[in-house]
Image (cartoon, rainbow, N blue to C red; front, top):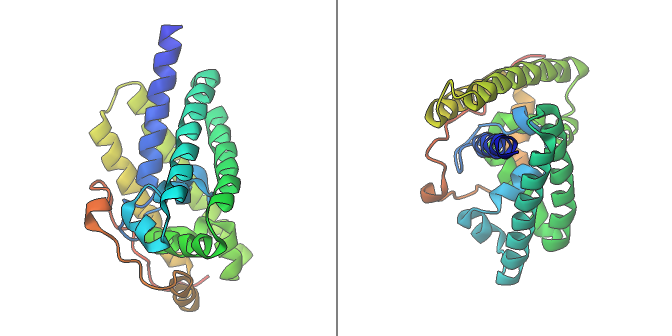
Length: 236
């Protein structure tokens, strides 16, 4: 029993690191969370932990209290759910997806419509090219079937690579530092490859979707983060 709990806690820690890295390295441009979880609301909820994001959105003290309570409850639910999953990665991925959907619904009740729109813009700026992993962004950019098929193949490749890293860390073949470095490398490579899929017009449109420039506070940036680049225009 103790071993199962230990495995569940270690796996939860790995997923937490992965999501944090996938969030794009704090305030830096162009990383991608979607290789792990897809274009979900969970990453935006993570962004709300940042003081610079809170400042840009004009988050009130009352909203901060509600967001903190939501995140604390989510962590407790995740811990319990991961223990029940007993190390099954597919089950844990499903759990994360369900929790992110739940958080999206809760967040929409806490933030104003204007704040939600601005959060989307900031998220696009931070994600850079990786923002196109979100189906809503793909539709806004009017991406072709050929383009979305290329994206799916890249996602599958990244997911396989990241899953292999998680297995190695869980088996203690690599330490957290090596895991972080490899995840960052995979994330940044993903951003570069995605940039090759976009046309010049789509690159311009994606930048416009980011809205007014987000003034990131370097102190809030994840020191492990990197740059995946917005990428230039590629063909279909």
